[in-house]
Image 1 (spheres, rainbow, N blue to C red):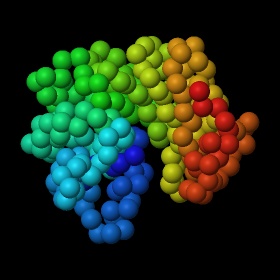
Image 2: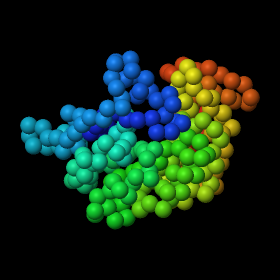
Image 3: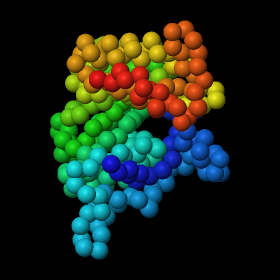
Length: 235
């Protein structure tokens, strides 16, 4: 597994961004997250060692722009170069998530056609209105590998109309002292939808405030992923 951040910085885009950990972390460091800048790591996928071999070994998963958005407008001038590196490293598999799926067709290379085999796109939705808007677009896009990311999930969401062709749905709660609670019944409901559609499902993390059987629990950040794993409901 490798992480590739060709640029840093992002803008809050919708309700799911309200308590974004990137903005909180940058604020503590005195960094303006709204400033989008190219990083020194830009050419990471094609960087080579002294022997002339790629530093990232073949067959790895590369998580792309996990602290920003690959489709953010300010990166339009850099993205084509990233696509060239992604194509060059066809021996790697790249995954990126986006809340800006409506920009997708503006941001793909000319030879995209029905998608690159080594790219997975995850469309992030946090509530029903954004699920209906983004996923109605996402469903029609030519992408080889599609994931839906319901994280942070801030209300019950029905995905039944959008699961065709989706390989994985990820569900998770929100982490913040002011976080909106995650109800376990919402998680189980999406799991049920995935089973009916024969789609993989992953419960990735609880929320700071987690409701189960009508009781509200408060968890610290170190417990969020471990408690989700203990539920043992991934399929």
